[in-house]
Image (cartoon, rainbow, N blue to C red; front, side):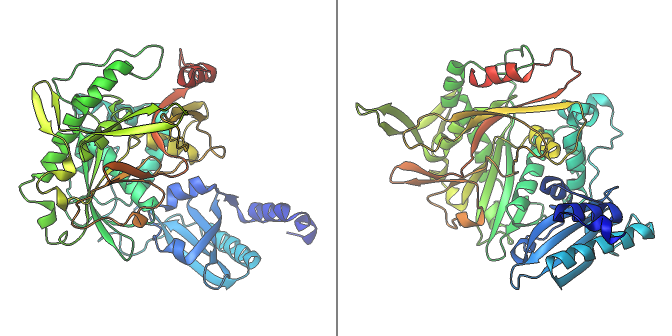
Length: 495
């Protein structure tokens, strides 16, 4: 290419180099959809990722990096191995930023011209990673309805695509993950996949080397074990009202308030108590002894129950509820109240999970209302996966950072690549056990909400944008009867 063509602004010169090299620029979201599962957590401590690129076929991915210690620049080029995972195939450092970019593009040209699209690493036949979630020979009647929907409907292409990338790196330690995901334990397995994504995003080393607990995570200096738990449905629960006008299934507010005092804590209690009273205690396992143990729980006891049940979890864990009033000066006054028991349909359980015998072996409870397939669909869409005529709208409630506020703020956003951001860990809460033998260092889980029980009250540290719950409309613009954005906004926030 002549020098005349390369004249112009810096952006124009880079664009010309991209075109000459057969390279396109990637968004951070799309880059992470491919690389988050293979990148070492220590990489972010060593270098600052600056620019992201791929070839046009996305068989090669490159990243321009600044070394944090000596401030020079370099690049890493990655190609797919025999299992389809992006892994490093060329690395160079000690350059200026401009020279590093030129060297990266030269590496792209070299590998593109070779015609190779697969780059074996020599260890693919012996490592245990790699799971195909979506191929199945099972008859349709045996498939979980959510799996069938995810696997067949065009609305869920973003989720399928980002999960496919993730699963190239996932280790199925039990050997039954796919069968359960497709049939009887879809909710449990989707929650486990969500945790896997969130923990990696938090910069933790994540291992799956033991049948239990599900995850061994490390910051490099501290280690924590995490067991995934889900609250399942009961045949004795009353059914939800049928949906209307394409809007989510919702219980009346009065009914929700009653269930928060009765059924919801019972459901959380049953799931968590069974983990506490497991025949072979988690904390007695040789590899767990002496380390914090966390139960990560998600509520799937009915459709959409995770969107309203979290207050019941807090109440059950700490045996405390909160009423509030505004005084004559208009200031919020919160009154904590002790909770002794929870009762539903004749079943009575003691409140205060953290105060039960043996619970001091549990360091904390991790919870999110977002560990669902809608989360994967939103994250996939932000990474550029999905169809052109797809429309994804999210509305929900977020924390209001006003000490005088008693209720959260509503929000509504359209999920569009390049216009909004979302993280995997957004909405995660860790409830710390005041009696834990081995407390969890909150600095090991940055950017999530942390809650402690101190002086008879709950004290919380929340990120700037903390979501309590949300609903996602997942639409194709060609769908008959799809609500428009204005209708959704009006339903969501009343304006």
